[in-house]
Structure formats: structure tokens, C-alpha cells
Amino acid sequence: MPNLYHDTAEPAAAVPALEGGRQTDVLIVGAGFTGLSTALSLAERGAGAVVLETHDPGWGASGRNGGQVNAGLKADPDAVERDFGADLGARMSAFAGAAPAYVFDLIARLAIPCEARRNGTLRAAIRTRHVRKLEETANQLARRGAAVELFGRSESAAATGNERYAAALFDRRGGDLNPLSFARGLARAALRAGASIHGGSRVLSLSRSGDRWLARTARGTVTADQVVLATNGYTDDLWPGLRRNVVPLFGAIVASEVLPEEIARQVMPARPVLYESGAVTVYYRIDGAGRLLIGGRGPMSEISSVASAPHLPAYARELWPALRSVAWTHAWGGRLAMTADRYPHIIEPAPGVIACLGYNGRGVALSTSMGGQIANRIMDRTAQFDMPITSIKTIAFHRLWPLAVRAEIARGRLCDMLGL
Image 1: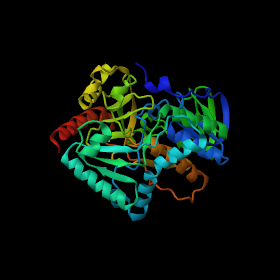
Image 2: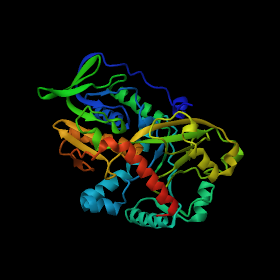
Image 3: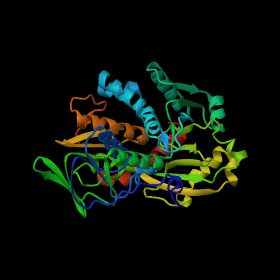
Image 4: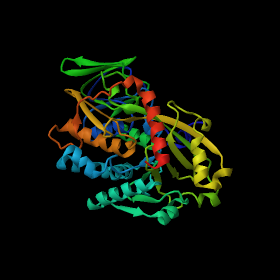
């Protein structure tokens, strides 16, 4: 049971392994959305960019996620402004709120075929406490001019085709896409613009070479003025301490067969994408071909069969009993990165090095937009940057993260069950 996107995505561009020595302006480690968007933005502005990737573009979470293009940060705008001050906090929320537009505009400008739809997102609440929180969020976003609307129980049922939700926040800014097609489209666009991308080229070491940086792979080297570390949930020990700045979480997604027409009319008839409020969220959408994709927390490992995440199709059948006769054809997972404070971390651990990681489940829009911001900062150090630059903040007892995550998931499920 492979990743559905592997069966349906646009073809990948050729990205041969690095051979020999290269000189460039900017070395980018990681060919996910952050790395590819940064490379594209730099190349379009005339800078030399070389991307080194252990596998292929989109191999990690960028090509395995739920395909939801969500607006905003995890925290509400008022909280962001309390945490970072009125000026920077407002810019952070505005940047994150505009991130889906950045993605959809980029797709349109570059004609990237990736099943992109700006069909809106629903944040759905089951419990009364979550409804109150949705109301607060809706009010804060509306005061800032966001295109949002709070649905009651009947409107939520009409949009989703089930009676599960007491309320839902509809955000017209978001939508969905095939993320692997999008990653591969970014790679093709970056190559056309003049960037170089090398798959099968894990960076084994990174060190100073005079006033520049030297990266070594198994069969080559890259010397660069600047380095971007864009490895997110797959961050290793290439840069000391960076891996311990985030906790990697495993997500699990299953996909149905193409739904028969009479069933497809009942499941998410309005065709937005949805994620649930709560400590342990479930998210789902109907893709362009008419399959249901539903995801959430799974085992703390990669999965390759529905048997590894039986709670997902079971929950789908609970929401829509008509799915009892439907087959589940694909199952997959991947690693996303969470930070302790639930904000993305942009870190400059040394002169000429910038790392960006920890999108906390909102990576499709945020990471793509962040590529433009990183490119701006590299090209012009005086340019405004709409996220805080932080130092490495290692998480205490990081080596115990699998146990801590399991405990937190169990606690969250209990709280959700009890409505706490």
C-alpha cells in the first residue's frame, strides 16, 4: 500500500547526485518546500543556489502530508502579539495569514500542475469548550479583515455531510493540493530558473573554509557563501544541537478508493478541507479524483498499511456510515516537526547560516512562504523579516521524545473525550 501521491503525482525532474566540486552563492540542505521555495526565489533574483537532498525533492513531509493549505499560525493573533509585541506579532500573523495566497499565486504564476483548489478550510469543534475558542478566533481574525465565517451546527452539517460538529470556522483563504506534485513542480521551476538540485546527496559534514562554508557528500563538495538548513522533521546532527530544537511527530494518512457517485455526494459535499479542534486532531479532505483522505496521529514510526492505523477508516465510517462498503487502498506516514512554543523557529547559529524548522503541522503554506522570506534576508540583510530570529533552544530530555509524545497523545485523547 504505497503513498497515494506516489501513484498520482506529476513526474519528478531528474536530479542526479552531486559529483565533484561546486562553487555557489547559497547552499541549501533539504529539498522540501522550504528548500525548494528558497532556491526558486534566489535563482529568480540571479543568485546561485545549489540544493542537496538525501533522497529526492518532496521525499519527506513535503510529499507526505494531508495536502491542506492552511492560513495562520497555531496561536491566535492576540496571543502572537502578546508573545512578540504589537509590531512583530501583527506582522507574523499577517504573514502567516497570507501564506495560502503566496502558494496559490506561485502555482498560478508558474503553472504548476498539482490539483490546487482554493476551496477553503474548516476548523471543526466537537466540544462546547472548543466552540467558545472558535468564536474567539473568528472574532480576532474578523477584526483583522480575514475572510472567515463561523458556521453553526446546521451549516457545519451541510458542509461536511455529518452531524459531528457543534460549530466550524470556515476560512476562505485556504484550500488543498497534491503536495508531492507541488514539491516536484517547485523543483522543476527552480531548475528552470537556474538553481541546481542534487538528489541522493546527503550532506555528511559542514565546516568553515576560509570565509565560506564547505559541505561534503559521499561523492562531492559544495563551497558557498551562505547556507540554508531546511530539513525540518528529518533534521539530523549535521549542525550541533539543531535536531534537539524540535520534536519529530509521525502522522498517518489513509486514502479510500474513488468514492462511488452516490456516496461522494454525501461526504464533504461542499468540498472544503477540514481539521478538528482538540488536543489530538483528525483532518480530512476529498481529493480531485473523489477519494477520501483522512489523517491523524499514528504509531511513532512510518506506516505502509491501513492495518497500522485502523482508527482512521473506523472514524471515517463513524462520520459517514455509507463508507462501510468502501475499500481503503493507500496508507502512508511521515515526520513533521513540533517546537516547544508551537511557533516556527528561524535560527542563525553562525554568520552565513540560517535554519528554519518547526511548522507544527502547518507547513504547506508557511514553509513555502518562508522560502521567499529567507531569500530576501540572504539578498538584503536590511530587508524586513516577518518572523523572529531565534537562537537554538534545545528541548530538555530530548532523547526521551518518543515516550513523551506517546504520553502527550494519551493525555490529549483523554482530555478530548472528557471535553476538557
